[in-house]
Length: 337
Ligand SMILES: [Zn+2]
Ligand SMILES: [Zn+2]
Ligand SMILES: [Zn+2]
Ligand SMILES: [Zn+2]
Image 1 (spheres, rainbow, N blue to C red):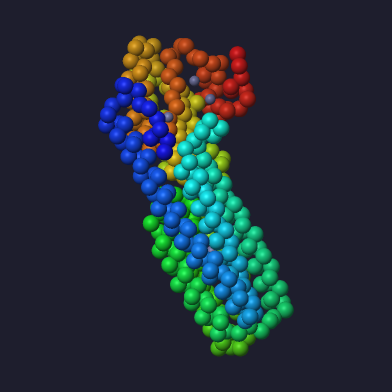
Image 2: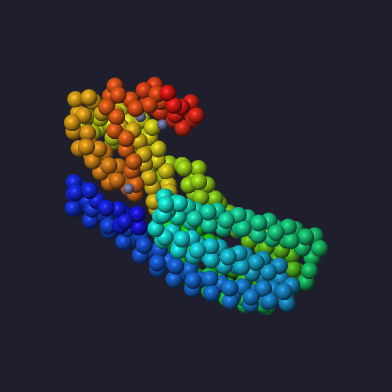
C-alpha cells in the first residue's frame, strides 16, 4: 500500500524498488482474501447463534445460552475485524498520514473488551444457577454442542489461510479454536446431566466457558495495548539496532531512536545519526546504508533518519545529549533554545 504510492528518486537502485513493490502487493492480497473468509464466517456464526440460543432457552441450559451469547459476540467481533481489514486497505490521505492501520488495533481492543463483558455476565449467571439450581434437559445440550464444534472447526479452517501475519485474523482464528473446546465442555456437561440426573454440571461448564473467554482475550489485550503504547515491535532489539547503525563506517553515534508498530505487520523507525565531520561529503551514501540495513535486518516498513555532523547539533536536546537517555520525549528534552 504505502510503498506502491511512493515515487522513487532517480538515485534509488532498481532492485531495491522491486523489493518494495513486492511487499505492497503481498500485503493487499492477504487482506482481500481475508475479507472474503471473514464474511463467510460471520454468516455461518449468525445462523448458528439463533439455533443455539433457542435450543438453550427450551432446554433451560445456561451452558448453551452462554455459548450462544458468546458466539453472538464472536459475530460482532468478526464484523469489526471485517471492517478493520477493509479500512486498513484504504490508502493514507492528508488527514491521516499514517493510513488506517490502527483501525485494526482499535477493533481488536473492542473485541477483547466485549469478550470480557460477556465473560463476566456468564460467570454472574452461573453462580446464581449454582445457588438456585434449574432442571436442564441433556439431549438438546449434547446435540447442539456437537453442531457447535463442527461449525467452529469449519470457521477455523476458513480463517486459517490469513491467520499468520495479521493480528485481527490471528486473534479471530485462535478464538474459534477455543470455542470448539468450549463445545466439547458442553457435550461433557450434557453427558453428566444425562447420567447423574443432576443439573449442577451445566452452570459449572458455564463458569469454565466464562474463564476460557477471559483467557482467550488475553493475547489480544497485550498486543493491542503494546501497539497503542508505541512499544518496540516484537522481535526488534533496540540495542541491536544501535549496534548495526554504529557499525557503519563514518557513523559516530545514534540517538533519539524510536521504533514502533503502526498497525499489524507495519513497523517504523526514526533516529538521529551523528557522523564524523570528515565524512560529511559522503553523508548520502551513509544514509542509504543506514536505511538498507534497518529495512533488511529489522524489516521496518518506514524509516525517518536525521543525519547530523558531529559538532553541528541542530537542537539543544541533540547538543546536550538528552536524547541518548530516557528523557528523549519529555518536555525538557525538546524545548526550543
Ligand atoms: Zn468465541
Ligand atoms: Zn529526541
Ligand atoms: Zn516513506
Ligand atoms: Zn539529534
